[in-house]
Amino acid sequence: MSNEIGESSTAAPTVPVEVLAIVESLETMAFVTCDPAERADVLNAPAEPQWTAIAYAMQDGRGGLIEVATSMAFGQVLAANMLALAPDDPECRARAEDVLRELLNVACGTLLRHALPPAAAGSTGGAGPRRTVFVGLPGGKPLTEAAWQQIAEDPKTSALFAEGQPLLVRFNDRIDGSTELPE
View 1: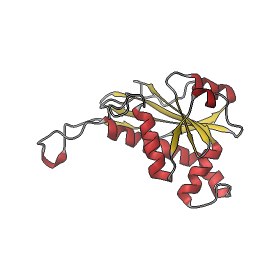
View 2: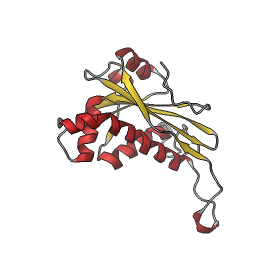
View 3: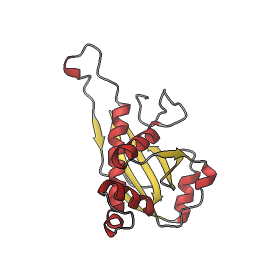
């Protein structure tokens, strides 16, 4: 893994570390695996309502927004896996947004864990140099088809499929600490 947020891993230079954080978080949280998708396969928004979740992560003054755009149906699948319920259970529909926010919360922790270098060799107690780390509360909002397409066309966006649903993942450097999504 790279030691910088938003940079590619040395193990897989074509996969950004934030995408690896999402993949690892989905596997850990909800036993969901992801497959890469071609950009052309995700340009059109899913038929179900779309939603995007964002979170802010910062390490030693460098940070940014990690964003996942997907369908509410995928949020329901995650909720079902985490709550051991059927995806069409009313509780899964009610919890879909919260689960997508929690995905970003876990992904930010995973991202920072991969971005921070391991403890210095020879240090006592495994403690390396003191680091300043901040993770903001995840937010989210519904997406229009036009907003979906804008995210899908962004060169910073990586496309995945999980449980038959598209996921768009992107990282935007932000130095101001703002968690507001661009319009």
